[in-house]
Image (cartoon, rainbow, N blue to C red; front, side, top):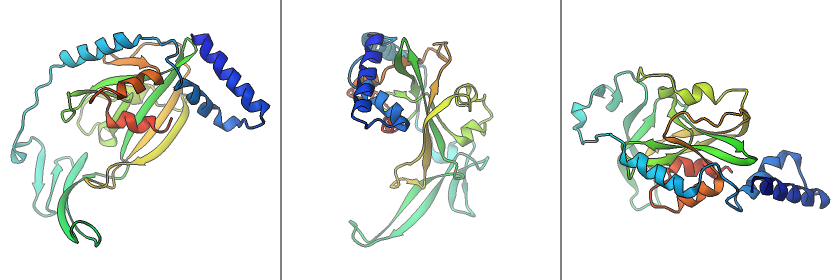
Length: 252
């Protein structure tokens, strides 16, 4: 089936060239069009991916409990500025906004907003690689405390710049350090804004890179290579795919 992918793709390209509508700068677009058509021979069977995801969810040890805001470690209320922030003054802060605007349900209102510290935003990264001739994407079954089901299928890299710059004093991000470099060919690289109803001027850099390295090894057991067709099948399942993965896939 891998050869079938190349065969169909080449036939499509030949057709475009014959009709004199082929554009070299759209070559990756043409590949994406064929990717979506069929479950081309994948590295991992869809059934096995289902079992893997359920196993990761079942074996995740996280404990989540509600905590009073005034008892959160390293988070403080800044009386001078009237905001909640981290002691390091990084990550994000909670600010108050008063809005006046006619034509809405009410003409003015107050509400809290989450505001990113600095305007670098975050990075949503996705690695693409051909395995046996078929394009695959490196997907993580990622834990976030606010997720429905705790674990959701997420992009290869999902982090704020505060995390990447180790404001939490933790380890360096392995994915950013080893994969998102200049020697990986960039397919897409765009700034995308987040929900402006709760997040104040929040944006993320959506970055898709193509890897030509021969190794198919993943960074850990919570990562798997998936085809675009397989990811689209998982989107049909309730609460399995994160909004960040859905967002970056919109660029494909």
